[in-house]
Image (tube, rainbow, N blue to C red; front, side, top):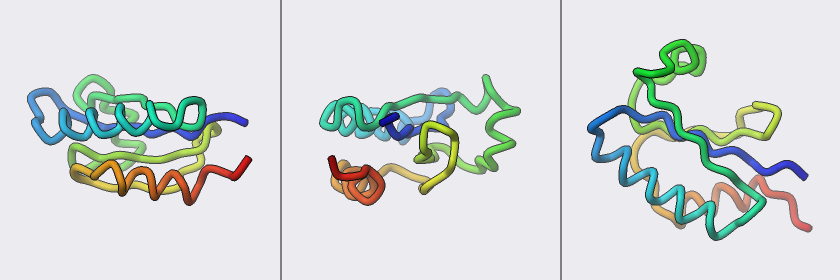
Length: 93
């Protein structure tokens, strides 16, 4: 089974983005092989950011490996919030 993808849309010099990155790194370490983290700097990838309708940073988008969006949230999440979200979408083994 392919892992879910947590994509963090961030911007340089964004303190909230750094806090979100830290939370997402911690969470993905707790679920190895079940979720991966990727980060997109909106200034470096404006086309992708626009296609994904990113209007604020940080924004986290949860997708299946095929790109199907499952959820999105702006702002800094807590680890329990992210784990709860993942639990809703990671199939039981």
